[in-house]
Each structure stands twice: as structure tokens, then as C-alpha cells.
Length: 261
Image 1 (cartoon, rainbow, N blue to C red):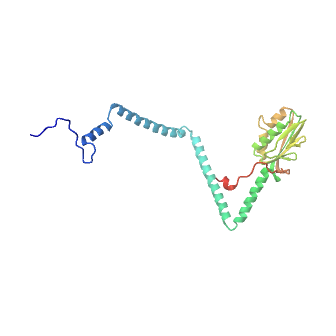
Image 2 (image 1 turned 90 degrees about the vertical axis):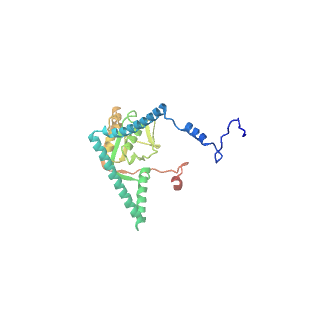
Image 3 (image 1 turned 180 degrees about the vertical axis):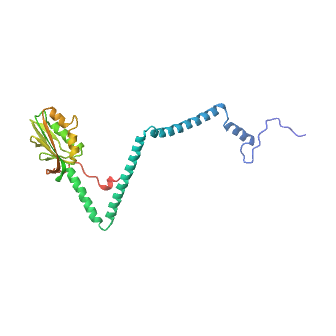
């Protein structure tokens, strides 16, 4: 007779020595996603949310133009066209300059370009004389009517109006120019000025003169305090005063190789 075992049966391992096929089946059934009502609702909500976001982005992009009037759309189109034409002209000009510099006469063109830049920087720094169309401005009156602060405001308004070169009396006005008042005398960069205080300015004459006559501007303020302001537009103004540049104690130029980093 054969003996029967009464103990529990041990699963027979597969050929790879791992779990039996029935164990893999149970793991798969436990790990696979179940189509429950909660999962279905979450999936539907995510789909609706994505559709709503895409729709909102599209509508926002369209409304930015749909809400504009026809003349505004035409203006935008004109601006885009003009900007494109301007950029094309600048590209053509730069390409022409590049070709000239690469040609046989490139050295002459480079020297001319360098000299032009030097002249421009000299005018801005006040180290060279300048001439061109512009205006003269004379301010006169009591210390209350015309103070150091008044001359500062005049200088700022002229700069904002596009003044390219300027002097007051015999002092060249540059970026560091300052006005001080003491004992009824106004000085520019430490040099005493005489009344009437006269500015000679190079720039567009009409723009400069209009800037001084704006409501609440320098002319109205001085006249309101009993002073006088006279402005003359001229075809040619000569700036004779020059600024003596002193070497800075602390500031130094950055080497080109470091500036490009």
C-alpha cells in the first residue's frame, strides 16, 4: 500500500525557480487598474479641465485682436510694416558699411568712422567746440525769480528736449555740471555767472523753444515770480566754451575681452 501525506501541499516551483503561474495571476489582478466609478469620474474631470484650459488660451489670444476697432488694426499693421521697412534699411546700411570695411578702401572707411565717433563723443563730453542750429535763452530777475534751482531746471528741460551741446555764459554744460547759489551770486561748476543768465543751445530750434514754453514750465515759473525769459531761434549757434576733462581717481575702463564676457 502507498502512504498518503496528510500535510499541506507545497506549490511546485516553475522552471525558473520563481513563483507559480497562479501567483503571477493574483499579482496582476491586484495591480491592474480597476474601472471603478471614482476612477472614471477623475478621468472625465481631467479631460474636461484640459479642454477648458485649451479653449481659454485660444479665446484670450483671439480677443486681443477681436476687441480692437478697424482703425486700430490698420494702425498696428502700419506700425509693423514701418518697423519692418526701417529694420530692412538699417540692415542694408550695416551691410554696406561692412562691405566698405572689407574692401580695399576699408582702412579709410574705418578711419572716417572712427573720426566721426570721436567728434560725436567730443561734443557730448564738451571737449570740442560745436556749431549748428539752436536757440539762445536769457533769464533775468531777482534772486527769488531766478535761482540756482531755476538754472538747473532750465538745463534739464533743454536736455529732455534734445539739446546736443550747451553752454551758460562761458561755462560748457556737461553731464557733471552743477549750479550753486551764495550771497545772490549763482555759479556753474564753481565759475560765477552774470545776469542775465544766457544759455546757448544746439538742437532743433522749434522743439527746444517749445519745451521752455510748456504750461508750468520754466518760462511760466520765472515770469510768475516777476522775472523775464527771452528765447531766440537761430539757424546757427556757436558753442565756444570747452570742458577740461580731468582723469578719474577711481573709475577705469573695462578691457574689451572682459566686457564681452
